[in-house]
Length: 366
Image (cartoon, rainbow, N blue to C red; front, top):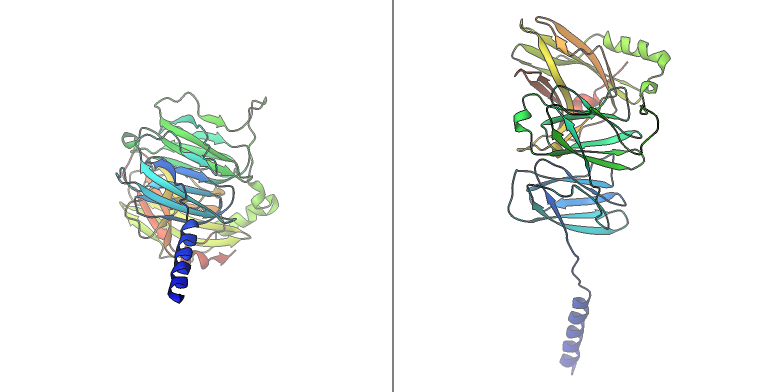
């Protein structure tokens, strides 16, 4: 009899356990190598995981409710999965496949609605600007064939340009996305066009005024203090001698690093030891993984400069240029570098070097 009771108990327990299991539907999304996919959740992401290295998954620190996904290679045939848990105890599962052409690049959870992006056009000789309706706190671009950053001394202007020397590699289409301080998300397709019809786009509701609102950053350092602070930083005795690179007769180095309130002030020097003038196409400042075999744009997090002083885009032969550039205070995770990269306009004298977190935390007071 005891054996019979035990058998019935085990059977009931098994039926009860089975009754508690139900499948959770996985939502389908497609990714590719030239565009970034964004998932916008109603609450902060607490956990995210990709099963394979087919895709890169990242939750940017300053937009905790956004997850970005991108293919790590230009094609993969198998389907993979991405799992996400958000604040409030919600769990999501996504089936991820590769597609050369993407109909959607953004999904608002939980109903998976999407913004149909407009298209902006860029080339390699003129900057295209997006003027956001408020302060921009996050920027992403889908392919490294374009250079995208916040315009210095502003909070709501994004500038874009195709990288010279990369025009032949420009994909059929890429994208740029950004989020503002109120949590609004915007995304646009980006195409190359030799002669774009417009170079300035105002984002958001149409306004009757002809001039767009520009949010300046002059109040970062009070006007009465700025000249004194920048002069002291620029003229400070050099303290750093072992951070930089020498290549193709171009010497690019970090001279000093100071802190002022919540600002990091870097003093860089570029010396041209050749007779040939050095024309700078752009300088990038970004966080990158230490061990990344195949970098994608989503694995490179650009640090947006707030302003700079004494910068010039051309260095004459046997000349030099020293400049100061300011960023919001930041640190570098142990598994990443802060990379500074210069690309020469219509040339091949590209130089870069990396800084570690130890270099940042050893900052000096002014």
